[in-house]
Length: 326
Image 1 (cartoon, rainbow, N blue to C red):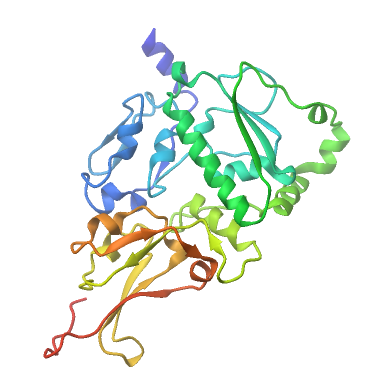
Image 2: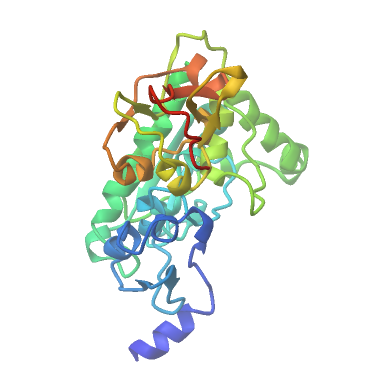
């Protein structure tokens, strides 16, 4: 019977997509990261040269997506603004999603729409065939990050997460006529979301940044910040002792780090950081052979939006004219 249920469930594929070019297990080694495998409640993930997902055993809970530090996994959830959203284990006629843990922070902002309010209904996650009690923690983490993005934009966002047996559409939603729905249409829904924060229906080509990272940056970019304004982002800080080796540039999944040799007619080497490409995965922190990199969440809008910045400068060693190997 279990095999039959797995076969039937595999007819609807909820497994996330996977980008090896962003995966720390690929960029560094299979021992560098195993978060997705460790958090999977159904042993549907193994890591060989890269991550492999058993599309039959995978229930689509989204825990691996939420846990991946480098956005290498993506659930590709399609949501529209709605005041109520329920998971697949909750009864009712409100809009549903397979599992709430599939939602990222940007998805929650889009759900809230122009009213900046949404109710999320979950079932009993501790006894759920899709996820586990860890699902609640994953959802709450994304709620917190969504609230932080909204606060940065001076928006009073409300996201309520409740355990419920059923959730129906609000009275306002039920009373919408066909004419109302036609008037609002897709264009109207887009405009409403744009008024609240920013339009989030972004594509994601294979050579672009992760979708969620791009969306979060665009949400902040749509704000009216002073250069000194604090924003919810993290950036690596390089302290004294950097030997200007290429390790951080090699392990960074998004190419946020690069080196320049004798820039602007200066002698020495400069480590360059593109802030908007940093996703805080800590690959550089763990890989740095001299341990001089640490993440900092005290980031200003001026830093994040200012383009490439000098993260570290190393003058040439005194008494030597040897060219640094590229």
